Image (cartoon, rainbow, N blue to C red):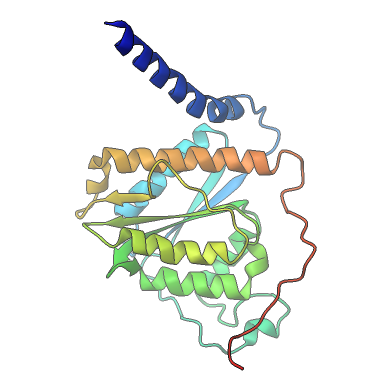
Length: 242
């Protein structure tokens, strides 16, 4: 190996250590007194399909870093859409007026969860209709349960539309002051048939990195015992019709 190659490899190794070490050191030095829980939602009608495989990969990595998690299945259960009835604004934040589907179940689970990860298959370049309806109702009727909690979305597709799907999901997080957790690439994995997503080695690694980053951020946010930022202004609300 000549001098130039040696310097190049040494520099790359140092750069890699600089990127990886802070996260690894932080996670490895935590004593475990504080327990965190991440709620994982499978928005696919297939309870054991490719989206579920991604969530299981995330779950295993979170467990490795001492973070609890729970996977909730939407499955083929009917999910109502928001009908703008205003009922949630009349019950002092108790939740959506429709209390007979998974929205109310997930709202209850968010009370005990510190973060949220939502997985969805790609349908025509958008999230699954059921998970989209559920998230819209959850965030509008019980937004106080998700405010300021770290969140991430992941999308599984056969070929395309995943980035548009992630953009749709992330827009909801961004309106609720939720830190959006990223990975080494967009949170995307590819697969058509059941279990094929496991063959996407980069996609699976992306899920593991997402989970590591989620654990790291949770522990950083809660390090001083005050995970909620203090804001001096009440949110403004207006429209553009004069």
